[in-house]
Length: 215
Image (cartoon, rainbow, N blue to C red; front, side):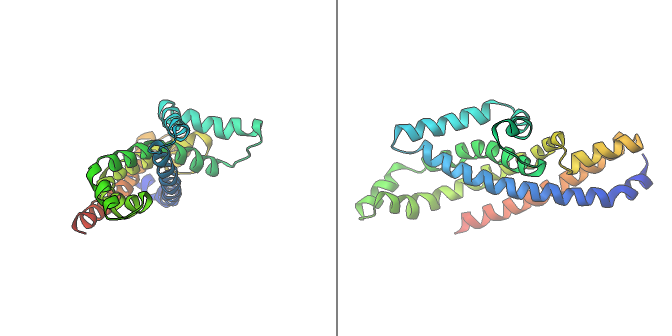
């Protein structure tokens, strides 16, 4: 193993790691927004919204994320959608992640006993107040760990954007393999940085989970 080469290219991989982190953060925010809207649609009393929510989940969970990225980035210009590679990566992965988060959020909400809502309504709260003040605070405790799993999956999925030339960890590894012919060292370095990112996120999720369980 060429340690000297790994130390030489490490700064460039570190720059790429920041791109991966930024991509993960923006994608997670978009995914959480899409997941919240999707869960609201799936739980709506209106059949049309329930259908649209179910269609969204089925479509984006039922097709490969890489195909979705290709359609958005390469096919988008045909229908007037012009995005650079980073924007396409954020939007494509964010919408895909939102489909998984939809079911995570929906599952946490329906896990709360129906008696909680009925009790809140008995106390004079409206349906919205019962959801906001009673159901969601309890459901939030159940969401943290599953959403943490979704986030870990999302971080690893950011490697897919290398296929549309976003200069993140995987793309950087592939680029240096072409000039050094050292695939083991390059992918090992990228893998270690992915592990560090995921470990830090995992510790943060564990801390947050402990906090919400106490409150």
